[in-house]
Image 1 (cartoon, rainbow over the protein chains, first blue to last red):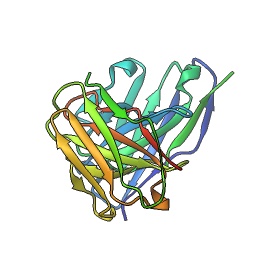
Image 2: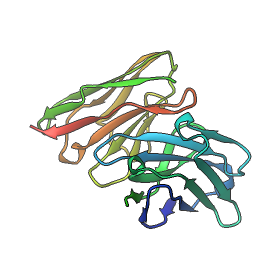
Image 3: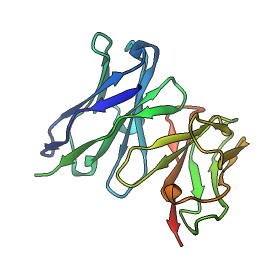
Length: 117
Length: 107
């Protein structure tokens, strides 16, 4: 059964960093990429970036360039998303989604990141 | 960036109604369009890829059409489970972009 299981909710102060994990089950992790998508409270979906399973191709949304790092660990089948210099408007649910450079066919359950002093 | 515009933003309908949601791209994306359904408090779920290909397990009352810049998602007979927000997304180019969503509400 294909599943993406994300790490738990996080609270950070402005200026801090957060790292969210996404562990894959039920498929060959290295054969697929992973997109990261976020959703601010009451808002729509915002694509952040995409990374290949082997970590050799990465696409970042321009809005997040310089603040976002995506990585993968093929030995554990886990993808990571780190966002730095957090601001209050980074408060959102962050989703990982399996993505073979096309559409997102399986999604994690989401990780709420709250940025507040 | 390719802009995706969805309309309407909210739609009120009754069980059994035929519902159509439109998504327009700011430039041609061929058929590289996906539709997602998001229920309250849940992650998005892929319904349709390549504009008209129904994902396995998705009820046949859902259908997608279009190419180029104009696309539609149709629900032929709305069911209680279908009250949700629907998003289109282009995957013709990076950055991937989503429409702003269409909320289907109970009339």
